[in-house]
Length: 414
Image (cartoon, rainbow, N blue to C red; front, side, top):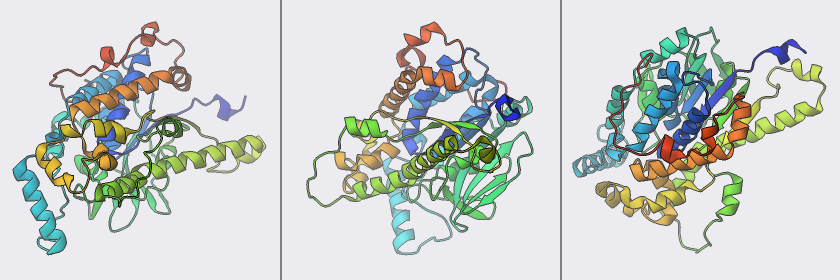
């Protein structure tokens, strides 16, 4: 056996972006929590997140000393979500922000202050209340975590910047259009990574304004590999090709697309296409490696095989969002109606903005069931020899059921 074969693999977890769609990831993580035999065991030494996935990633990093407890607390927050916890959804807040946006974008008023369609100041308050970032340092010091990273997009430099906090001396990197910078993660990094373009305002980090990390993120899997991962679990937020075949698109009507319909495709292109393209590229490299002599592969940096397991929704999330569209706050529903976001054809945009309990809980349940469908693959991937027998009969109603809660902050050692 070669030295490479005897080295234990380093498992990376990749949490993609997608606004409210990230509730699906919480369902998958809840299933993993039920599969883990040790409540304190963190199976992901490397955790990388983008956009709303960055918030989930940091929540896991803060609580990595007691990993399954961190997942359950994260699930409680998502289960009780309401839009007003993420952005101003009341009439005064929506009208004021709409006026600012029009004045800024069309009249050039107040250009020195970044503005967007929605005011997401409540999100900062939520993050500061629920996350104790000192837990990251504690997890790194006790070797429960190797590296934690979030990716944001620099509007001036045009680079996808991965900000990472690590235990080992992992060297920063620079590739075409993407950069890795070692730092101490703060709330600004999270807010910047989750700032969906136009919808949420950009955030200044150091000397540059940043927005959602999914923008121009050419290689979403790459940061995890730079941070030392040798295999990765990817939690996506788009329907797989199998689900799209089972749920075919609606018949063509020949009517002009609404603004919401166009925006939905743009958001899908931003959050989904690059990740799926990167997975396809990695799959081709792995196939090529199986055809080459082992010596040639070992001597070619960047061409080593990387085991990838993907868990993605088995149902189209925009169709689920369409069923819950009446949960959207009335003020926001009024302003989005003209753009077509409250119609089924515009539900793509809605699927990113619908931070409401009914929608989020259905995504959590879907994620849990999709993960349990791949229970054997997940157990093998994570090296879990003995899966608790009760897991097979347990469902999300028993493990992540919606209930009124007041979760404690994710603190170091909690």
